[in-house]
Image (cartoon, rainbow, N blue to C red; front, side):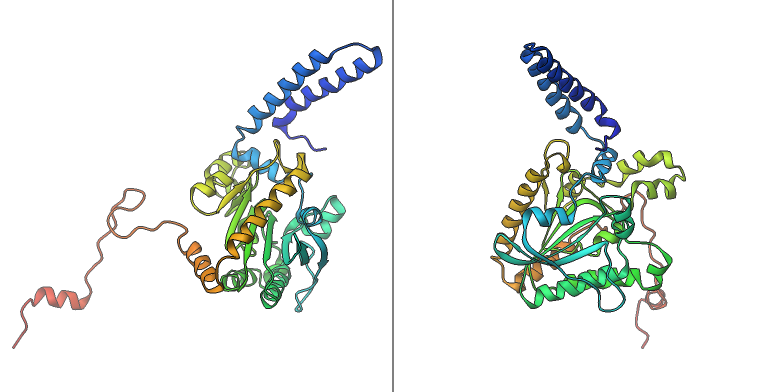
Amino acid sequence: MTILEFEKPIVELEQKIEELKKVSLKGNVDVSEELETLKEKALQLKKEIYGALTPWQKVQIARHPDRPYTLDYIKMMMEDFTELHGDRYFADDQALIGGVARFMGEPVMVIGHQKGLDTKENLKRNFGCANPEGYRKALRLMKLAERFEMPLFCFIDTPGAYPGLGAEERGQAEAIAVNLREMMGIKTRIVVVVIGEGGSGGALGIGVGDQIFMLENSYYSVISPEGCSAILWKDPKKTQDAANALRLTAEDLKKNNLIDDIIAEPLGGGHKNMELMAITLRDNLAESLEQLGKLSIDKLLKERYNKFRKMGVFFEGGITPYGVEKPKEEPNSEDKKKVNNPLPVS
């Protein structure tokens, strides 16, 4: 089990509890009061630590190797999953999986990034970094969902799209851009959930939806904290500063109206109680589908379009966001003539 640095005080306390239990069993000593005191102390410590996580600590939890991945959620929440393979152009990308399943009795299409459970599988799945064929496969499955009027679930969990030479040669940026354009018009309900890492264009390639959720300890960002610190400060020690500056937590994105809601996780993260996490996610997905099912397709597409059009902030004229006055535009030649010759010449 992977233990993060800030979790060590909790683990040490839990080890003391286990040791005390062993002592009571071996020596027939009643230590129930001491055990209850330590358990209450451990619970309080968990609440204090996990209730005040920094952005960088949340990134660490989002990347935790014990955290449930797309296939884990499919197994726990859905039935009769049949994986569909290939983009019909080049290959089958193992970093981005998808297929048909039954969700609470209803046929659905589910697409998501998939990381490996060990080094061998991570190499096979490219650590969740999809190639262009992954996004083209995803688009093929989206079109299939549209044809058969199946709701579409997209689970995001990637550090980013794969930036290798082969991926660039096969049109990585074009594949993601086409997905962004096409997803805006897919005529079926789309629910997007960031279940772990939401890195840059790799996340956006399956990130256009009618409702967008983030798990409590996930992150969604234009770049990773490591990439940001390398570009802006050229210093890997500035990773925590970058995480703070990027505003990448679920709370930050909800505050800026970039997601619809935050899905609570068990204390310490989804990997601490995977079954409870799956039940919570299932209930949120079911509620979302029910709400979206009340809308006509035209209304659904219109609201999806408006959702993304309203994202971000822009300013017109006057003072810019940084307090600098915009330079006045030079009048064109026609305007100059009008100024120099205010009266028409007879």
